[in-house]
Image: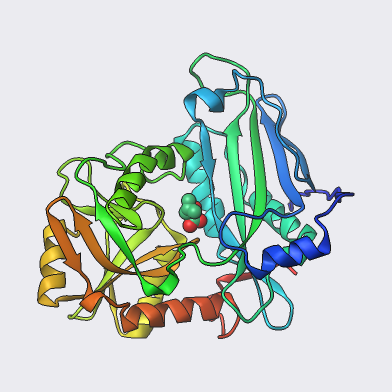
Length: 361
Ligand code: COI
């Protein structure tokens, strides 16, 4: 049965000229639309009070569990305007499934897939005017999240939980865009360990990553590349993205799942690889292989993948005793071709032969 998120339209929308200015240069995560979707969970009533309404601040007791024990998860997906004016989501069922998996890991209540889809679609319909025009690379970024709002200081799963979705028009995540980014290979910080929360999309993973991100910036890099926690030898993922590389043997290689995020863009690129003459491979990649392969030319391209970052070329890595240049320091042709292919599918410029798009408007 389709869940209903009834719309209570705001009486105070952002003025048309202000919205137009935001859409003209959205950046990432700076502007927010007029509405949000929401629902509340309690053990007695389950999920209830589903609604799409004006964006309103939360009122939380200072003991709210999320403020102390970080019982929180989130997602990221985008809505795209096509040339005929229609609006589409990209593989939202995968986000719903990952949200459910993250909820299980953080002992939060699972939100049924139909609620996830109805809330996201309801918000996109309410804020359709905020979906950027067709023709460019812009989209409406959607941020579903869930957190423990119960006022209680004991450590146990919360008995009151809030779910929400907000939306923000999005341009490029990195200012440097397709020019390429450099990643800092941290010798100090790791992201995840076996049995931990590495595969979950929870706020705590990102809070713990901020120190590594600052370390990367201090060394002139755009983001961090994490190695595994046990041996500090295997490539895991970047601060906000999965990573993949292209070999001279015609493979597209990305680290196997386990302690990394099961990225929607990662999965999509593995699928598209075949059309670009590449064999998709998921296996461990050591930092030694990365350095030696880039030096010898057996690794020709490296790139990052994520909903926000789309496909971003990686042109180099630095570390305490390490400096790696990828493919002469310029974005690779395969990276750019995969990027164009994915964006063309998302923006409706080529046929969606895989059924990845879901129409909303
Ligand atoms: C995304 O790519 O959607 C992310 O969630 C990464 C980041 C902006 C936190």
